[in-house]
Length: 452
Image (cartoon, rainbow, N blue to C red; front, top):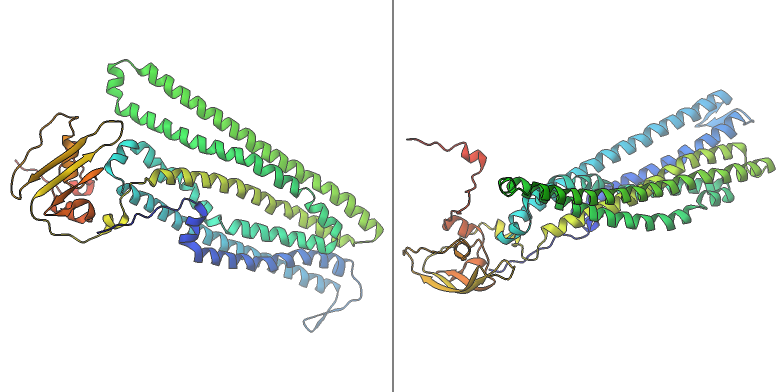
């Protein structure tokens, strides 16, 4: 039987689109509904100032009715209020749906990671400790849930909102539109370069925190030996050095993040200078109306929000991509068991002699646990494997039970290669008890009774 090993998606966005493409499309549709509402909310204040407050030639015809100045003002104001409710209703629906998708995808990701832990070959558990695996599944991927819901929605919604504001400003006057976007190229050039270093530092910090967790776990497990050999000072010094490294990395990240914020705030405060000077000049010369300038200033006040959200999204996206990649590389070893081997329910019939043909196995480090082992045990016979703790005795038994895969050679029972069977066959037909502490599920332990 041939099993194909599937790899995890190494790119966060490919993972998102693979499992939530339809949901992301729904998010885009909901996002598109908000843009006409938003533009109308920008246009109405200008109409209220120019056509109602400063307007003449009343009454005005609205929906077949003739309205005087004050009724016309109330109609426009209540229309604006209705648009506010509709726009916020769309945002509420969008945010709830994003949260739902994010939590579902986080559930899937955690499930997939634990599934891959169960597919690790035994030597992998000696290369990576539980103190590294547990935080990756629980805490390190927590932020990805929120980002997954925002992955498509935020750039689509904020970019669309930004374009609506800019289009409205350009419609009022092209010079004001150019003033609004004059400093965007500067931000677009500086921010990614500063952020790139932040991303590298964030990845370095994640690796360092994992090492710290591993060292703490080792110290707790070996606390008896630490006290017996008086090595407490060495362990404290080692941890102190790693904590200081983590401090330096985080301090460097803070410096760059706040430099990014400083540049953004400085540029955002410079743009109103162009509006007041250019806009005031145009109003005085009579090129645009006062109501148009008020509407443009209101639009620019809201324009800073989407731009900040896009810059924040870029930083979050870079940070989450680093977290995703650093997690995935630990759960995607090249020798992982195929999923079909774990989930297959077929139980083959095993009968006949147990045979090992030139079987060799090594976990690395220049030492072979089993080397060129050849033997045959007839069906029904009893056999004992004798040796010291580092003789390869346990590895031979684990190879025979199908728990280890030989580097060369093969293990067969009745002519069938154990490594080509689903896990159901050796798991149900071959008994194996480890020399280490046996594992019993706590719920099953509750049903065990011991009588004298």
